[in-house]
Structures are given as structure tokens and as C-alpha cells.
Image 1 (cartoon, rainbow, N blue to C red):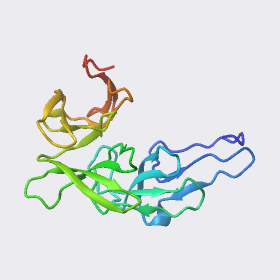
Image 2 (cartoon, rainbow, N blue to C red):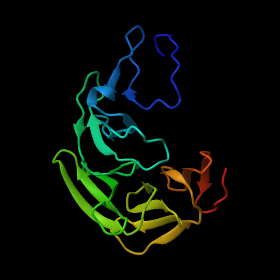
Image 3 (cartoon, rainbow, N blue to C red):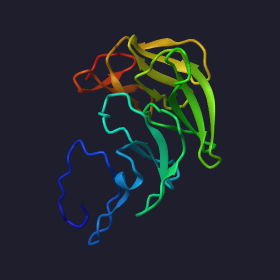
Image 4 (cartoon, rainbow, N blue to C red):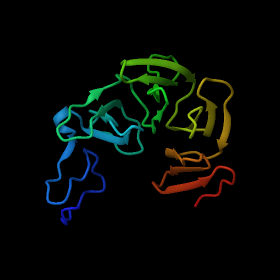
Length: 212
């Protein structure tokens, strides 16, 4: 730390989001899960303007990384003792949100009201507290990520890894791999990061899918 102190943190710890204070000052968390009646805080991301930290929160005590959970989206100001704002009441799939230029976010939620297990791509407007359904994928999805331009969703199912336009249309095969989770794409859209069934991190060139 800048204060020359060393602190050991359990590698499975996921209950505090914070930034390091300046040298000599106390290191204080921005947010503690227990104070908000949450058991888990996951996948924190700064907004493009740096004014907010967006994160997923859940009260599910049995959740473990790589498993399906019930998550909502929150945001908080990056300063000590800020109060978070809850933005959704949906069962969201933990996905790296895509921040649009108009201030909205693209997310993926489970459509629990449908007869078939399916998911929806939704657009969230945080300042207006509005949620719009954009399109639907009619099968269970375990993990997903938006491409670097935000016009396509890459998602994993029991059949493999697929790609489809955010606004709908035909589904195409991206990679014929199964039992993967935590999909992430590189800023240029060429590399795909994922975890296999053995919890190993794999980086794949989408044009030449040989794992590294």
C-alpha cells in the first residue's frame, strides 16, 4: 500500500470494494457488503467518466464463483461511506456491462417469467431509472459478454459458445467449446478469456482458437 503497509487478503474475498488512500492515511473501503444487507459484491467497474463504480450485489449466501446466482446491479460514488443506488430488481447474469455513449448500459437478465428458460438483453438508463428489453435468447445461458463495439453478445450454453446481434437475428457459432464460464473479451475483440471446468483461465484467439 502507499502507506508502506502490507495486508494479506483471502483470494476468495469478494465482500469489499475500495480504493487505496494516499500515503499515511487510513485505507478505508468505499462500501461493505454487510452494511447493505448483501452477502456478495462482484465485478466492480468504473463508469467511463469515472464518477461511479458499478457492481453486482446479491443476498445469496450459497453462491460460489462459476455458479448461477441471483444478482442485481448497483452503483456507488467512489468515496468513503457512499450510499449505493440499486438499479435493477432482475436476476442478472454477471456480465461486463457495456457502457453506451448516451449513458445507458447493456446487461443480460434471466427471463424467469417465461415457460422456457431464456435470457433477455436489457438496456438500463441509470439516471432515469428505466429498463428496456432489447431482445431475447430462447435457451439457458451460463455466461456472456458484449463485444468491444456493443453490437453483439457472445454467450455460453450447454451446446457451446455463440454470437448474436444485440438487436436480434440469427445465432452463429463463435467457438464449439462447452463447460466454460466468466467470458471476457479483449478491447480489440480478438481475444476471448474464459474459465474451463477445472477453473483454469484460458485465453483464445477467436480467429485461431487454440487455448493458451
